[in-house]
Image (cartoon, rainbow, N blue to C red):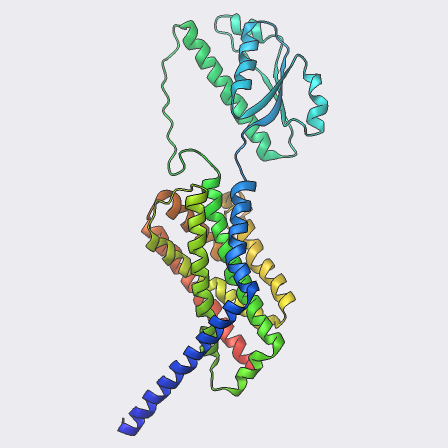
Length: 386
């Protein structure tokens, strides 16, 4: 290569760097001037975390039930008192199951616990097996399962206390020690808030990018780029990098709110948190660019961003619904959703700690999907600018 050719290459690289720097300055200033971008990146994450952290809970504490004590005697009254003392129930005591039938129909109680008239006789008889009846409202299967499980647990605890108090002979002394890993308190907020961060990052990466770029298509500023030497790759890189950094800033805000406001434990490392999040932003931003280039309309872009980004992440990522309980075809679909891998990684980094084999596997999938989506966005943008 001659000296002139070498100087030409250096000049070309310098021109590219100047163009890219100008694009970055333009996008950064536009983000600072655009209140809607800051609203989506700062206010929306905090609002969603408040909703998911405070309003949404999978814990079934103080569930309203009716306790029908149809059996006379101290044993039945003692069992009814156990249900009243349980933190899982807000129990009302009655003497007949028909007193609560209307309440169950109108959803004023979630279940009826019946202590039948033969309960006292069975409890007093040596070797007797006293039983209770549990009537639940099946229109809400999750709550119904909670009521049945907690009622059976309360009955088991009452029987164990009664056997210990009477010094029952011949019963095997079984000491069961239960341990719960990662979420010892079994508080649903500890799993919901990390999952909510994944939903927030999906909104920022997909919705914000789709809206902002589509707005430029509407205003004609994207076509104005056709008169400049900027290439499609430089244009997309200039768009992606500022919103990539904005997404990481929103992640920092979400993590601080999760740990210091909601008390979610953080057992992993900050490095793992940012690496996994950076990998997730690649497919999220790529999807937003594809939507914006395909629609060129803010309203249509927002609708597609919700359908293609937010709803799949909310419903199919394992954030609220267990993937293993979904139909098999739907489980196959979840393997292509970036949020599936991000939710799993976030719950691990917050609750379990650094599990690098999991992180590296999920990051590899996220980076692969990001590369594919960004390549498609670049190709689609070149066609639009042609």
